[in-house]
Length: 274
Image (tube, one colour):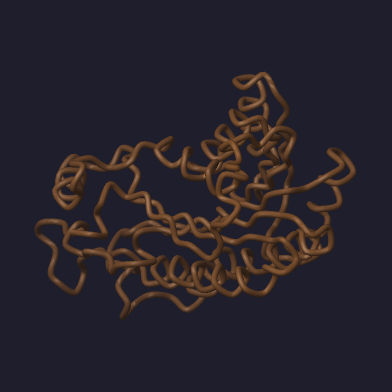
């Protein structure tokens, strides 16, 4: 007998790191729309609380904003403790937090590999990979102990393909000063799927699923020339909207995806297949 499809997240608690950023509130809104309770965790506590209040008001449900520095194990443990004390359960972890350093700074472009600062490398990997690891270790460990839970690592098309640096070119600059997508962005996003693969086998016998959601580039007020170049590389002919990833996230978090484990679900308008 076939089971009915179940996309509901009713009463499930989802911790979303980077909850106050561009996409974090969209993830939270999707969780709330499916009946879940999003916890927006961000180092910017007041922003996390404000975004959580907006999500709760829009959905008519609950949402919680919590300050957390995911690069510190004690802060992640405190986040888990607060969630358990306030909401009594935790079911989903969305590793969404990441640094996204600006493509260029005045003068010589720091983004180019030859000039990229080692301290920026450390900072980006601390948030994007170490932070995801610590959250998986501590919150995923709680999932394993309760023998249920879902982890979704938010990656990017640039975890699959190399950035086309031609998109970032600026007229009048010599080649050695042209801005580029920083190396850490690709390294972090590729590394997140490696973490997914490890987790998907490590805790599978404990009822914990782990998957990657790889996102295409979001239009967010970039120069018209950049948008035109980017859209020419996407079969659907447009960049993503911030809410374009909501359906895929709800699917991965829900029981409809109960046999999906270790997958990389790519939502990029077809860019990576062209």
